[in-house]
Length: 80
Image 1 (cartoon, rainbow, N blue to C red):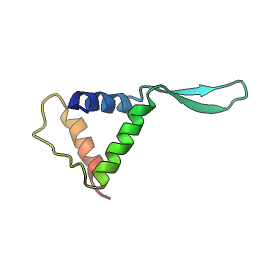
Image 2: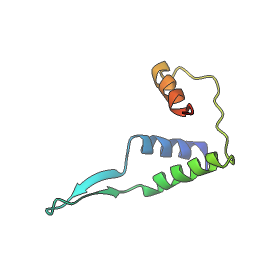
Image 3: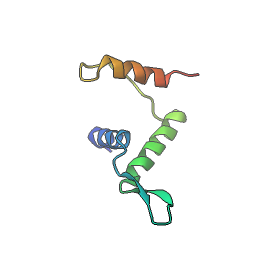
């Protein structure tokens, strides 16, 4: 899988693309997913990172990502 495809999957999942809330006349709620493969890919990626098969490496942040977003991302990665 190339980096561009992984990037598109991450962007899609972060924006909840393919996940839609659905309901019917019985007032039952659920969800519909058009791109469930993206969510499966993220789950597998997370498992591979957890097992140490994949290691995340961060280069110097580019100006494309705002400092505020990068700081928040780093906070999410901190261990509790």
